Image (cartoon, rainbow, N blue to C red):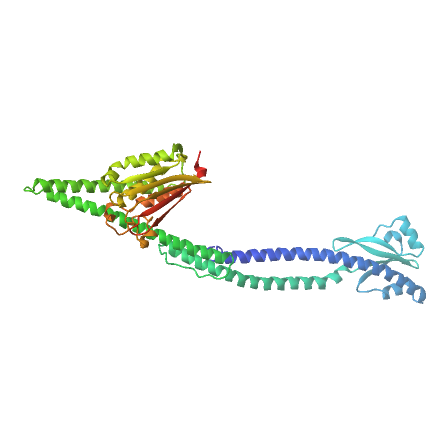
Length: 442
């Protein structure tokens, strides 16, 4: 079955069309024949009644015997039979019609022809009862052949046209099938050419967009794997190298302490990296907030600042807080990741003795949080990529992070239905703006 191509959509469409065409033709023939039959029979009945009257008039004016006249009056359009007795006539005649016949009138009687009952004309010439029955088939043979031939020609022409149309329609589908097969093999450079604005063209357009997205996702996946490998490799190599140095027997105490501190710092870095990867994996695979509680958003920000107290005290930083009291309905743990990363970055990139400004307010249906530092700012080239995974702008502090904090912030904010943006100029600090929908309030 498959070898003959019966699974092809082209053949299915053609067979469906031909089936519909044949069914429609059959219905058309039946309806036409029925309609035409009724019209023809009605006309024949009227003509036969007129014909019977004309025959009676001619019979009265000729010298021929009734038998000879009846024989000469036969026609190819109707069947003429004559009978001597009323009982011999193969039709039912009631008393009123018999009286009309005896009075010289023509009457209609019912006979069966072509599996239908039609009217025949009965009249009397001298002593003979004459029955005129129309030849219905003679009026249908030609027209039926003409109708059938016409419909068959229509079916043939329609089949050829649908074959051409279906081929044109299925051609891009074949290209899509071939392209899909290539994508399944992992080739994300495939593109399907398309033109027009019909459904097939739209399908090709969306297919091309899908391939581009898959290509981007594949690029991000490879980049993520490479970045994780690189981030793990550096501290592991460092730990391995300094551990080897610790095996030196004559190592001074100061060097031992220095190498030990480096190993501790690198293990902390690995721990933080692993923790951030787990957090990012959690939020990336989470499609909605499920664990919601009511908590004070302003109090959470204050607790986060206290949590980072050691870092900002080391740099002698001050905080300028403008926190409006707001109760929020959401995932408290996830929301805190926003402030830990944003305030942590503000501390990290601020100059010693600087001021960090944190503002919390709500206007209308939006909660706005702004975190401003007085650090060295973000280069303009880095602003567009600052929220990408593992991306770190060039700077003196780039080695201190792993490029996952802002990616976590962006994803958490998106899960909450909000948005995050950044404004910065080199040497003038940075401002991070977070907006959360007030509809999240309990």
